[in-house]
Image 1 (cartoon, rainbow, N blue to C red):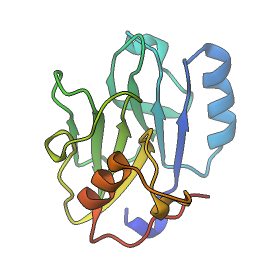
Image 2 (tube, helix red, strand yellow):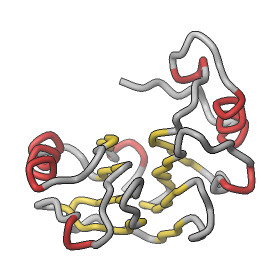
Image 3 (tube, rainbow, N blue to C red):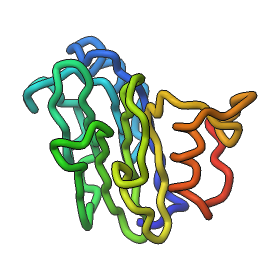
Length: 161
């Protein structure tokens, strides 16, 4: 699989109930190869299932939490997670020649470069950064947004739709 046929659904779930999982399944339909969720508020994997998708990795946390899914049958060549003591949570998966990083930064935290995953080859970074940067359509940038932008450059400008 190459970057031209990867489709990603990214969402801050703000708690992952059965109803929300059903809605996410409906939203993802058959078009998305990857689902990236932030703020799952889940502490166990059995509370994360989405029909038609495999849970590739998750970081349990009753206040935050991340989950990364791939459509069943998608070949993931590698998976990495942030260290347990890292206040910035992230999960990186690699599909073919593309790395996809799911990131959650809690609002009060200050970003340092050591907390973010290193950018390798073609990387798509998605998530809830709780930061602002003009690259993401904000009218101005804050310090956390600048740090995140510096860590993902020299990638092209990100546009969210």
